[in-house]
Length: 213
Ligand code: PAF
Image 1: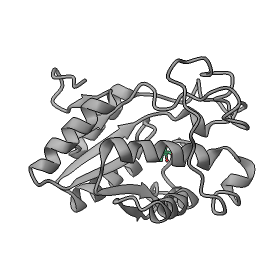
Image 2 (image 1 turned 90 degrees about the horizontal axis):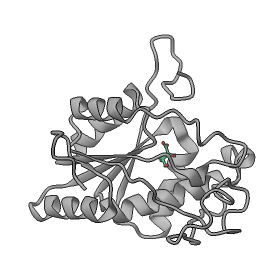
Image 3 (image 1 turned 135 degrees about the vertical axis):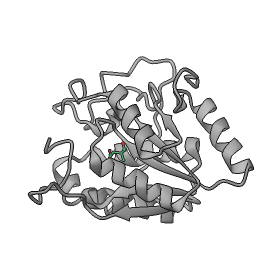
């Protein structure tokens, strides 16, 4: 559904998002996607800028993905600020926002090691299919957060299927994530160019990050 009261279209269903993207493509426009979990900062906006340089229209997604949080990680208190996010995206020149309510509902037992088990288990629309990049997801962040990249890859796959981007822009601050997604796109023949942008830093050199703020 698009909120017409806002100049920046905000879609909350896969069907509406996909219909809008297909209309853009039918008009010959190249589409870029910037996937985010919201609570945006200048680092995200630099990804929107990079996307605008590579495509005619830019969709930014805002979705706090439950499948990449483990039970002891604070999904429920993850910071959210959708109004500010939308205003920032509009000012940065994005053309649409995809803000799905729920993209992934796990069945009992399917999300071992992840806090999706027990939280969203009895839902009639529950899923049990995941995407994993077997080797690259294991070291580094995957060592301390074994559930993490499976959650990222599964939800990014869904975002790619729904938004059908020609280009998707990620930050190299999350270096392993960028490499894992690039590998997934290569291995599964997604027709998406994955771009990894250099780290954006604060004046004192600290990487811009939700965590650091
Ligand atoms: O980097 C993030 O914010 C997330 O991991 C992503 C890529 C949006 C997937 O949920």
